[in-house]
Length: 291
Image (cartoon, rainbow, N blue to C red):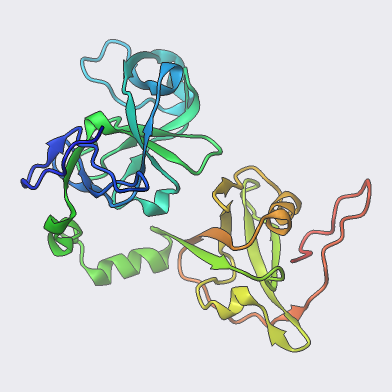
């Protein structure tokens, strides 16, 4: 049913070795430049029919396929290839290296194409809009023995970029920091509000109960202004703060929140007293109410 993990430096194209739980047993690499994409992550899934199709956009009149800008999709043709085996990854944060295009109206539905972020080889898979999962066609990737992992070589800084430069990019807002935090508690101690972009929700304050800080603040990870982008893997894109609060309140624990931060953030704002969020029937809740 599965092939052995290939020990060679290049890896085996289409290798599908998985452990007893069906999880990738090795490292998956780009077929062109051998950049490491997945390290012992990804569930092997057999697919058929429409689910087995990988749709590739091609600009009309061009010799090579290239991703289409979302506002020019009508000028692109789509071709279909079938792949019976796929690696399903729960979240983009589980991927070592991937680039995602703008959302495209493909025959499968609105999605973003997954490419190698180093050499732009692809598409190697896709992510449907609104879904946390990424799908990679197993036949397009090389699988290598996990014992051959070399983090220093696989994740070295690009030429011309050092840690000081990267830190400066993050602090200036030129780079986005993505992270996740998991909580067991029902009360989290945070106040959310619609962000200025109209498409996201951000943290505007921490709250306290009987003088005690909440789990979000105590995690030490989350900063004021950080945006909630997923709740237990479900995208919050386009949701207002009330909808996101409903997702958080109704979600089972443990609860995993995915966050994004643009630029450096301070923690100077004082905490405010906790007040349960209780939307009134037929009325919108007051912006800034919290959980």
